[in-house]
Length: 203
Length: 98
Image (cartoon, rainbow over all chains, first blue to last red; front, top):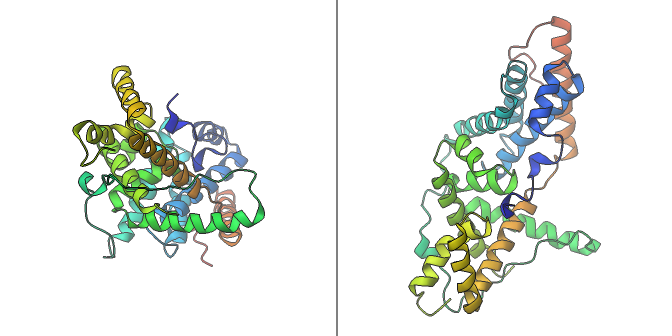
């Protein structure tokens, strides 16, 4: 098993997309409602974690809702829905984002990200499911710190991290959504992971 | 991680994501594993990278805030209600701003 695909991502907690789309095509109203909610959730997460703020999130959710409704009733390949959804959400968010100028534009150089010999970087352990209540506060702080680290990534890397690590898309699916080669996805993901590792040092 | 990053350590760092993703050939995977057995610093580095990946995954596991979810539900109701009434697909008329 590919260890990185052991999780299904935020999008995989519910029924799988192709099943939902197939159910929608049979006129299943509940499936349609669930699909429309999931499309809006994806748009919200993308706005928040890739575009860096909640200000455009509701507009992105509205776009995702309408486009998903129109598309889901006429899609021929249910398996293609997921990449269509993320491509649509990405395009809508990024078009809005282009008006702004506060994006980090630099590329990530491997030399900058190499650990020093006496690095001593300590990245904290992921949360334990059975954590005590006071640990929730610490974890909320940790989550904010991780999001702040994600926000420092150049957007082209942040999109890849979001789709791969958080939404659980495969390398091939990420390549289709972003419109780059699978090799390029792997390179961006690797640079981003090294950057995030350094940013999370000492938490 | 040896002082000044010797070639094998640098090559290893370049392969680490593919290593933890199970994306290396069997021969390359064995070579990395062999290096890790003899280089505690690189071994620590791999573990910290694994934790980074797990933390990012965890940080993204968020639900919609209740108010946002309520508005999302309202939009769906409005949209499907319009469709049912009109018997046609909506054309951007379901905007429910709050």
